[in-house]
Amino acid sequence: MELFGSSGIRGVALRYLTPELVLDIAKAAGTTWDADRVAVARDTRTTGELFANAAASGLAAVGCDVDRLGVVPTPAVGNYCESAGVPCVLVTASHNPPEFNGIKLVGDDGVELSVDVLERVERRVLDDDYDHADWRNAGATTRVEGVVDDYADQLIDAVDAEAIADADLTVAVDPGHGAASLASPRIYRELGCEVLTVNATPDGHFPGRQSEPVPANLADLQRLVATTDADVGIAHDGDADRAVFVDETGAFVDGDTSFAAMADACLEPGDAVVSAVNVSQRLVDVCDANDADLELTPIGATNIITRTRELHAEGTNVPIAGEGNGGVFFPPYRLSRDGAYIGARFLELLAAADGPVSEAVAPYADYHFVRRNVEYADDDERDEMLSAARAYVETADAEPNTTDGYRLDYGDAWVLVRPSGTEPKIRIYAESADADRAERLATDMYVAVESGR
Image 1 (spheres, rainbow, N blue to C red):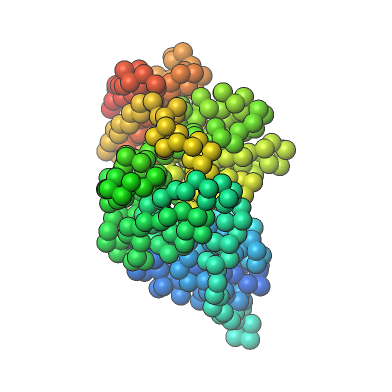
Image 2 (image 1 turned 45 degrees about the horizontal axis):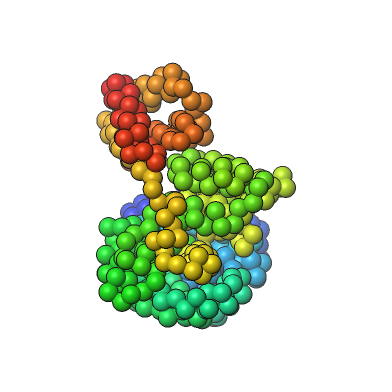
């Protein structure tokens, strides 16, 4: 797809992403959906209102009435779409820096659109093909209140609130000035937790930290947990569809570790887990231990959603899916990522473990991950380097998975090489419980790729 990537459209606001482009995307989406009503929502970014207005105008121009939801977390959008039976144009750039903005399209089931529907929307944009209304049939606008209230009530009903309350947890929350700045602290308080907050004022400049919840951006949360004796820290990205954790000492819990721990708690024999091709060995091991299948997709939420839907259609149970960046799906709840719900499920895990976070995740933490980048000058050099990587994997003592690049899985370790989708780089990943083995796998692949220059 030329416009839509693995998680919608994103770019620097007013450069790549312009009001004109948002208008066209909204017209294309409204035409494709052929819906009487469509919602428009946004996160806290400073350009959000500008693009939400453009989206609302585009939808009205093709005859759709518009429900304006305002600033709400992405998972609250999913809940509204599912309960009201309307799709949504969502203005968000998720974890990207404040100068970015983007568009996600959510269906009337509360789930991001599948690849085939996105391709239809994209084709209309590229072909300038819209069903414009005349002046008599232009859409009207309604501002909708209470969206976050309904979402919070629904989420609390969907988890074991009694067990969480009985655990008497102190939870530190860092929403990163994003769309869940008010919602997530409220939800955890209503679940019976004592809640402390940092960076919890909605502000699209992200003054306290950058939006992506990675260790380099979470010093405030780690300090808060360590100095207040909180039981756990929970951090979101800008639209709150991800959650990552800090243990009781203030140490960051790798997203692959928390994903594996939550998967181990809900898998049964015969289940399947859907994840991206850079999946951690710790999740591979958890699937093996539970006699569950692991289905790999190209990197990106859209691909995971599409494959999970296919498995559901085949009658396969998928209790959990996602990636190690904090973006975890619990499909029986909803086939969309929900940062506050992910956090609540982790609190359930802590309540059942009856011990600190560090002990609860310890069985999944002793792995070593290596990542290397190889820059290239142009497409010809990239192709030569990938050809060299292909020649290397064809001689390896493992069957390559070619879902997205080349992944070699050795049972106890793996290595992956793939071109970046956003930068002129070839990425190499390797992981093993043995640090030397992980380094060796990454180095051997690096040497092979470099030989193609």
